[in-house]
Image (tube, rainbow, N blue to C red; front, side):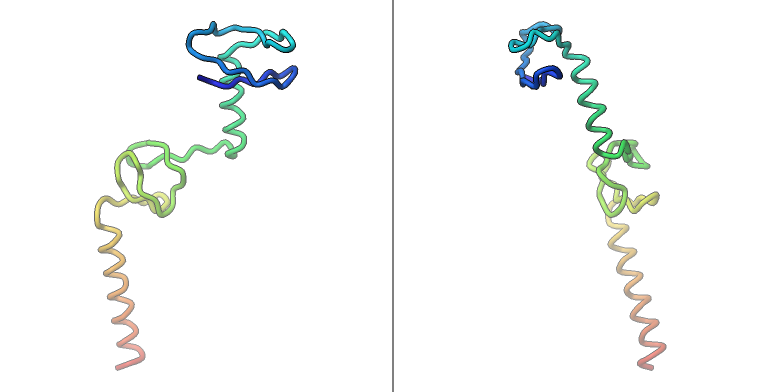
Length: 110
């Protein structure tokens, strides 16, 4: 079931699979086509989302953003153009914190 809005009068019409693709608005009689309505809907959604589609660099699946997210398709961690699988982000954060503590100890405490 889809809701199609008449461009002439603004009435919302519920379309189901048992109706023909081309139909008329019950209020004003305007001829409507389901395919053109769907194309307009997709164009409006793309324009509202700034027309950018972000893809995972590993599997080319669609993701909501490219920074600090796990791809729902391939389970890779995305950090901009860089991608990691599994526990590598955790291990790298652990190594970076170890190096930072070591540098702090060598410079200030020792």
